[in-house]
Image (cartoon, rainbow, N blue to C red; front, side, top):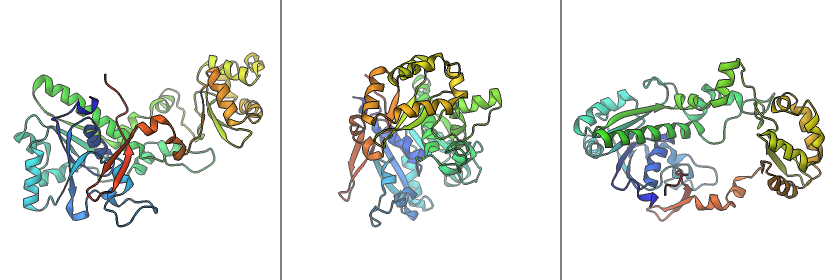
Length: 359
């Protein structure tokens, strides 16, 4: 069973908010024993109090906290108290993997730095999550700050409108993936050599590593990406949205010449295939606005259902724009819900973070 892959692996999590706890939950989903050490003096992980207006203010947890804290054992300790510190140290040195987002200097003062712990347990994999490339940089590093610093905010939103933050803490999620990959490589290395290691990543570097084509567009051509809503800077019509006859909105993501040909066939616009302004993707990117006017005139005559049915039948990538309620009408989404009953009887739900299968 996939959820037993890491059975017998012990993970200790000295991390809060989203990125570090997401790493811990990943291992919990795959069968590891995950012990989360929370700060007793502050009421635990700060996200316990990050509640929406609709949530019970008296509840000890928030939906936000639940999203990355499934399947863990929780210990509330004060690491400045000698007894609690000693207990935490004894737990830490028995771990296979330790996840930390302490500042290195703070970890050293408390005796939870990798050098100290690995003297006691040479096989320990110490996974350090930092905010910036310099581990001691004290600049605030919540996700919105990193989205701004790494260029995501500047690129995101509509033209001639203010920048828009992505609606999930994407930089934290990206950093969690980087740290998970590093830990998995370290586990493989330990299997071969018997030795543990120190692995680390940062929110900023994870964000920069994810700039993908926007980075290469700039590095190779000097192009500074501008806000263009859902549209793609390199492909058209891709990310472009259109109003349907029933007031619903449809998105196209046409990425190949064959798909564009099929799109024209569905809309009875084969004449566009002979037009130099639209024959190639490069031409369509340059003439996107005039192309969209022609497409919109045909799509607005179709209901969303009819348009989606015809596009799917013709192999044209298209999508309805779902709200979160509609998302959870998808069978795949329902299958990925993880439930957990808390000590007080509260039933919690979240999405699993493991989105792969091993057979």
